Length: 107
Image (cartoon, rainbow, N blue to C red; front, top):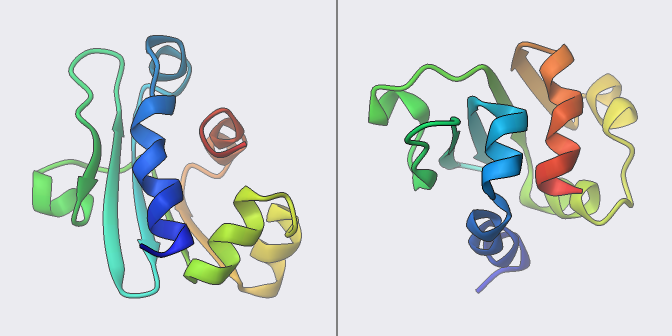
């Protein structure tokens, strides 16, 4: 199992009711060519799902695209999210202000 896959596998445990209350959103995540949906809605959020949000008839509040290597650097605090976005290593689409709330999930 890759390190990125291990981080994603542990993600569901982090989706506590408190985190879901804070986020209350659907997030699309693309790592290299793999697509995931993080359904962190307050009521009825399904957690981490394989496939893009559209595959689950969900509309993401934010979509994040990066490489697996850069994802690991972001999660481990080795890559500054703002610098990653400015350099094109991290692509965000949707509610940019919401992106700051993701530290409760990935931090």
